[in-house]
Image (cartoon, rainbow, N blue to C red; front, side):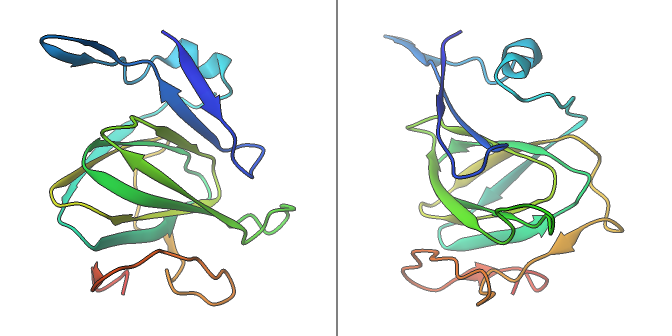
Length: 168
């Protein structure tokens, strides 16, 4: 499998563009192979997968767990995905970067431990897939307000934002 690695501003975060095979029947993409991604710098063993379904203008996040790395991709639709370095000892502490992930570009994002993560849906019927290196735990989940002025994320919001009570 051929995978392009795209640059991020963070030494540990990775954006991948895997090869997609197309023919008259549709498309085929290998979504994940531990050995291949380990050679590209993703060393975690993922223990839990989650899938969310969201309508347009839904904002999910920003959530993080200092113990958890994530590997995410969009299976249907398009999102603006944001990560924020929340490691106080890091040179990139509270810096953020956004990425357009979609079922058309097939980008996959590896999010290291200690990064807050969230996304804004840009289309209807978004299906978003997460792989996580530890099981989700309310006890360990931390939140960063998506409008935090000390971070200053440009969400490129057009229209109303739909968020859960805990994310609002």
